[in-house]
Structure formats: structure tokens, C-alpha cells
Image (tube, helix red, strand yellow):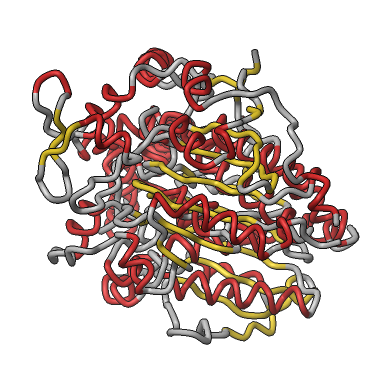
Length: 318
Length: 303
């Protein structure tokens, strides 16, 4: 397996051994079922030991896993009638963000999300899911379109952050993110957001202001990447592991802070181990939220969204 | 006219700019320059300009609103100095002066760092908010101060700015905000990030109600502050030469392995690229703001 993670190595080796024993048993006609049973029990125990209590850094690795489902995978699994729409009408079409219209459970919705690639070639075309301003402006155009036609908006968040480059700054990446924040805050249609992988800083938040925000169990969400935090705090980006702990970026932490509304469970070993199961869990969460939110009048919806963000933060008053 | 009701009406106790400085517990002004990497002749008698390298008497520099008399380089100034330069008679009625920082993540050394930053700057936090008048027009004013913790935005900054916007909305005053910030405060993690959403949500409501918001970007305005309220003014102003950008210069250089243009992320670069309405010299700032307020009928929006 090309994409195995260091911490799962012992388990993967054991599973390989069981497979070899099975093959040998079939070829030789000898009965190893007792041994195989024993090894399988051992593998099960090992799996629960490894996966039950993942560290923040291990979850970070899962959140970035190249086989992890992407926005287009979720769209394919959740939506019917989907049509992808392109371009910001001002500058170009940024492939780091995808969006379009489809139906979820029979309800027409606008779906927008960061898009990473599954291989290097696609990742280069999609800038590893790091948008430039035109990506955020495309997203905003589709949100305003959704508002006009009274469609709820679903956002999938999975980005290391906005793309740091000359072009980004020239075309106003700060303004593009800021504009999405202010427009999403006042959008008169329901917004449901799901952090599916990496929730990297302002580049993630620019698709993340919603009535309901969820995180997948092994996704992360932070003000800066663990490596970036390590570089700034300890002048050493290789201390990302330590920063992942310190910055409290896991779904469990973020949910306990009240910043997201729920955590969507993943299959043992991460979302990519059973993509269909992951997508089904995400769909279930979205449909439940959708059914609830479409009943709320838009004035009240915007007011409730404001109150939700208003109470975020901790301070003391003398 | 509604505006005439507010005109010239003395609403607050008389305070000179010196009083404001003292009230805020500021130290003598020349010490501030040491935080600015300016090379100094002993005793702080002379200040060598970061812009042109020429030396100027520190006293002369201060009299000149901390603008280099030779090349017009704008030195960062403190929030108290900014208030004195901006509001009529320097009169400022402060909001939420007692709001202080807590440590929501249990972040190593954050509490002691806060103590040090407070002692160093004489400030409680990185923004002062309150109200006063500019050219007779009442405004809600926010001023960030980069001498405190790089002006970084944590929960207190976000909450104070949000409340200031709510006050402006309730009183139908315009909101003027001078930004100066290194970006989000990492020590408050996700809560810092959420201040971007919170302040933007408040601006959304304010804008919907017809309120006038003028953002004035000063050196430095970067990161999460640029990606939220700094860029959301109905009118975006900057001081000459101010550093304004989202991603840090070093990160961009590492990513693209390319040398960046000399004027990269300066106010002039942003103006050229269409991100600012105008660049205003510090000495003309107050008059420019007063004129813009006049043009908006005192900024009483909507009704």
C-alpha cells in the first residue's frame, strides 16, 4: 500500500500475514483456520488499539490522506441531477474550488467546496485545494445565485489555506475572503458547512460561515496549519506534531469549544477506508439539517446565524 | 436636520490629548520609537528614518505627527496618538475599557505573554473603541495598536470591534476603524479565526441598516485582519507606504521561489490593483474623514 501511514504499519503487516496464510492454506489444502482465527482476533484488537485513540497528529495525517474523499466524491455520492458551474465572471475559473447545483433528498441545493486532487497531476491543476481570489469569487457568485432562487447552500471545506502567491495578493485575496464572510453572514438562505479534511485558516472560513457547521471525526480546523504554527512559535516547521497538540485543532476539541455543531463519525481507520459509509454518514447529517433549516423564515435564520457567531470567543470583564 | 443636533454639542468631559495619553497609562512618546526598529542616537535625541535613512530630531518628528519631514515616511503611532490626531480636541469616550484577555486553549506561556505585552505597551489589549467627533460629526471609532502583541486579533479584539459596530448601529453613527495588526492571534487558535466571522457578521448587519463604515489601513495590516474588516469598508483608505496583505512575504517567497516586487503589499500596490479607494497622508487624514462624513450627511444612514 503506497499510502500507508507510519502508525498503522504493524496492523497492515499483520493483515498481510493473514492474507498470505489464507492463500497458502488454499494452495496447499492444509487447514490453518484456527491460526487464522487467532490472528484475526489479534488484528481486531490491534486495530482498536491503534485507531480508538488517535493523536491530533495522526488525525492530521488522516485529514490529509490522498485517498480521502474529496468534494466531487461527496457530490457524486450525495447529489442527483448535479450540474457543475464554472467561473467568477471577472477573471477566471479556479479549479481549487468547485460548485454547482444538484438535488439532495429531492431538494434543489447549491453545493460548493474546495477540491483537492487524488493524484499529483490533478493536485497541480487544482493547486492542492488552495484557492486564489477568483475561486472565492466563484463561490460567492454561486451563493448569491442560490439566494436568488431560494436554494440552500452546502459547503465542503478541505484546504490547507488560500494560495500564497503574487497573483493572489494582486487580485486581493484578503478582500475575496472578507467579502465571503460578510456575504455569508447575511445570506438569506440556509447554509450548511462540513469540514471534510483540512480546515486551514481564513481560506477555509471563507466557505465556512453557516447555520450548521459539522466536522468529520478525523478532520482538523485551525487558525494556522500545525507546521505554520510551529514555524512561528518555535521557528521550526518540523515541530508540526507538537503544534497539532497545542493548537487544539481536532474535531473533538473544536466541537467541545462550541465552534461546530456536531462531529460526523468516520469508519475505523479513517474516511478513505470505507468511502461509501463516510458519504452516507455525511448525507444523513446534511439531510437532517436541511429539513430543519428550510422551515425557518430567512429573517430569523440570519438573526440566529448572527447570534451564533456573536457569542464565539472568550474574554473577561472587570 | 438631525446632524445639527449633534453638531458642536459637548457630550463628554474635557480631555486634552495629553490627558488621554495619561489616562491610558502611556509612557513618554520617544520611548515608543524603540519598538519600531529605528536606529537611534543615544538618549533618543535623534531618530534615523527607516524610509530615507536621514536623521531627524525625535522631538521634531513627534511634532510632525511622526512623519519623516524629509521623505514623508509614516512611523507607526500608538492608539492614543491616533485618537489625539483624529478626534476633535482629542475627546474620546471609551467603550469596554475593562475587557481583558483569558486563555481559552490553555496555551503554554500565553498568560505571562499577555502580562508582558500589557506592561510593555500600557494597553489592556490591541484595540481601543469608543466615540467622539470628527469635524463636529459624531462617530464610533476603533483604533488598533500594533505595539501590543503585534496588534493581533484574539477574542477581546473581535468582541470590542463587534460591540463598537453594534453601538454605531444603535446610535446611527458612522464607524471608523484604523487597522494595525499582524493578523489572527495564534494563542487563541480557532477562537481567533472565528473573530473574523463575528466582526464580518456585525458589519453585514450594519451595512444592511445603511451604516457608513470607513476602514483606514495603517502599517501593518495583515493576515486575518486584512481578510475581514480591514477590506470591508464602504470606503477603504490607507496611509502612504502602509504594509497591507494577507499572506506573509516569507511564506510567498518559499511557495513560489521568486523574488517579490519592491512595492509588494504596500498601500500603493493595493491602490494600483484596485483594493483601496484612496491613500491619505496622515496630516490630511482628519480633514478627509470629516469631508467624507459631510458627504454622507454625517453618515446617518438608511432612514
